[in-house]
Length: 371
Length: 141
Image 1: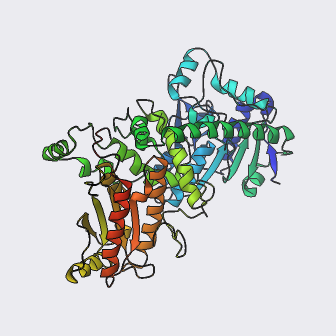
Image 2: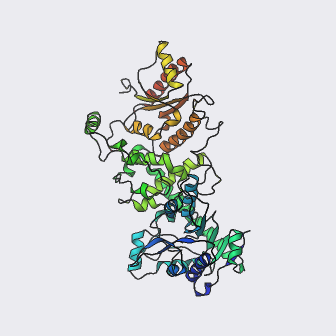
Image 3: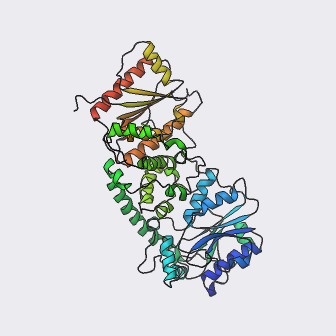
């Protein structure tokens, strides 16, 4: 049973309490800087901002229902070789999971990094989020109001991203500070590392029973959606024609890979000259096949990426959001990723102590794969 | 069609064991089907799945990967790593509508020329029974 504390200021609203919490972390010197979402200048969009003073937190929006960039990628840049200062990162649960995977891939240094995981209240596609704001909506206020009542759902007429609709891990795990807003009746609760809790010194609180019930109901609903969505993907991919159709609109722009937090390789084969074929090579294929789809290697790209990173896929869905042609990349990667992860009983993002499947081996295993 | 179908198999062989085994099969004048195109690698663990997938998408009817027996890897443990990669590869293929039994991973040592020749015969027969790779003649990938 973890200890919970109630963040003061909740009577002015959960958002005010969240800002108070972040301000206290800075003012008490528990972190030297914070990575936190804020509205971009001009509004209508959220961006990750690195701040080192409480004035810059005046419009911080830690629960905004949008994720234009996966913060794990940013943390890789901010902590390469070790962060020079104590950095607090305000993250959604899938960003925490991706950060854990990147730490194991030696792309994030956790040494001076304080992971602050916030309940995820779902996210809209960035362009839908902007449209909602332009239409006079306040997506954060809506998210917090529904969360206070113990539910999560989009503003009427809008929809969350598919990856969020099938996400069964809306509450962060494995971080120094867990921030709860779902099913808390409008107050902000925190739990996590005892050192941080002691230093913050907020009043102790009980975890409300409503929160457990709200989470259980949400996870059940999401799991059902996940099973339905992934079942549909498996149905479509039952033969190679299905695969070709699935990626039929792919233009091999590499956006899914660029957005993916796990695809970190500096020397990716798909950015190399490996697939810059000389004209005579196309001529050779043409003679052999009689017809040749261009750009070539679109299916090869996705199948290779599935091989390289699906074991670590945390299901954040930024690949789908990045696709200019609306391909269901996230569904395919989650469907295949779950099977790949099951081979090694691996749960990506759960713990830095779980070994990456492709980084280790057992002498006595997989007897049916090789003879 | 089935009678005149000749499988095309791309074989990735490790330099230290299976390639030497293939060499021994040759110098021992052992007969095995000529359907196999061999590519020599330094280690089965050095094989990126991208090349296996590329061969299958280009219409290869089967892909063979040969490495040293467990415990015998010239680089200590490359073959164990290859086994994990191939496990993921086969799962990925299976999940995307391919017949993952078109990909074989086998351990054949430098002294096992006979095993190499027999394994090639076995694989060519198995692939012949399956028929051509359904992606042969497809241009949509």
